[in-house]
Image 1 (cartoon, rainbow, N blue to C red):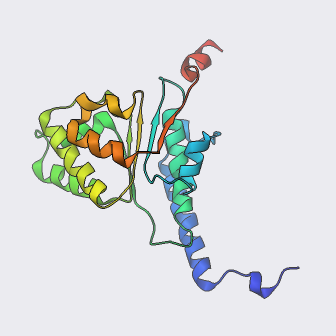
Image 2 (image 1 turned 60 degrees about the vertical axis):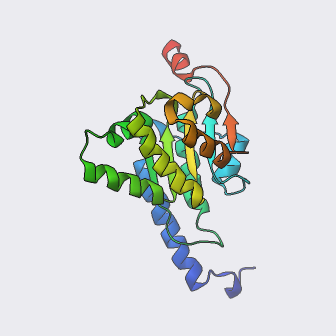
Length: 205
């Protein structure tokens, strides 16, 4: 039977309100094609629920198997999971497609905005970079990427990466120093999704 002791405390009600607002705000940022709930790989689901031993996540697999869709849905659940017993405030998530990120980090962009972007991406609670292998690097963008990853590595801030290749195959994109840190950050957190190209299946239907 329901009793007064079952009612949430004032603090818990306050946390629940912020959780619901944060989840709704993030859901509104998810691109339309990825808003449909899907069944997540067990390793991804564990990470999203805060049950993984690795705070970062690297999702890999062939083209069209649902890596990006899985990533968006995983972050959606991850935001919810941050409002548990160890709640430290509403998490801030930045999501970038790798090609857009590398363009924003290039020296021909405004210097002040570039420095501000590096600082911001060092400090957000979760950094999501989609399709990392697709980026075309330069020595400049690799240096900026190193600044971002080195700070996140030192301060144990997680990343979520999707790529159609394994972390060890990203050397030409990230450079050696970033690759070394990424390997440790994602140790135990690499999930390989297998299957056919879903896009081609839809087109053939």
